[in-house]
Length: 88
Image 1: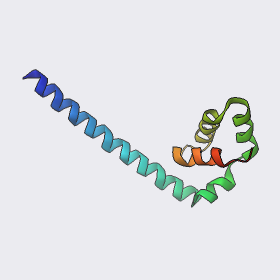
Image 2 (image 1 turned 120 degrees about the vertical axis):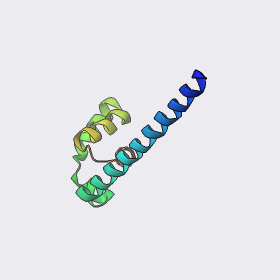
Image 3 (image 1 turned 45 degrees about the vertical axis):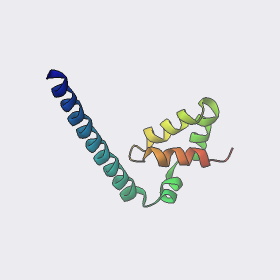
């Protein structure tokens, strides 16, 4: 009996977290679009030399984190794309 209740609660909590995560993701995407208009608009605002320096010293993950720290409304996918498309 308790196992069934525990399972139901776990499913409910998981569903609530998924919905909250989806809402946060959509909110971030909308904020990014409002601020930058497009990926190219975002790309034009980033300090490319700084991010390339971070990537050269500490790698891609650190560079992606630097982008996200400086531009918190940019989705992770866009930050990753930006870093991966930087010239060597």
